[in-house]
Amino acid sequence: MKRWAAKGGAALDYGNIGIIYQTQGKLDDALSMHQKALEIDEALGHQEGMANVYGNIGIIYQTQGKLHEALSMYQKSLEINQALGRQEGIAIQYANIGIIYKTQGKLADAKRVWLKSEAIFKSVGINHNAELVRGWLEDL
Image (cartoon, rainbow, N blue to C red; front, side, top):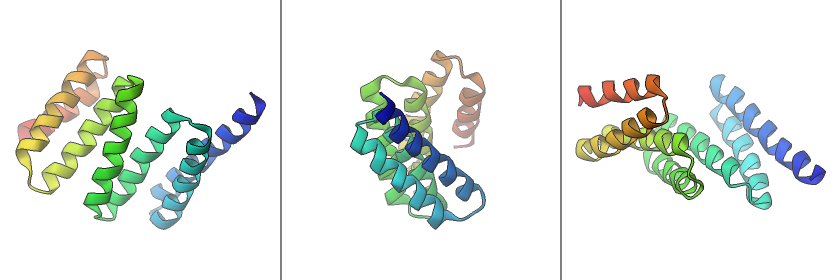
């Protein structure tokens, strides 16, 4: 247990440093930290951590305008969240995927996934996120 905690903790630390770099606009450094976190989570088979890291990497790619790569990361995170039954993670990734679709001009696809996201957020009681997604839907 101690071995997992130490390595799992390192993955979390790398991810947190990545978020700090991302906030500072140091996207290459952020990506490097998230990739280190992902390597550890993969080695440990830590699916929840992998889902989180894929989502964070997707945000970086989206910020860089690499929409195809961002979409791929969000879809990987979505698949893991679905397998784990993590409803909030599913809703978050549907929301992120919808943003990519909207940016690509795929409005019907954006609407489809945002409706799923909104419904899940409502079902788990995260109403402020449901309202945010509702606003995006109304702006389509």
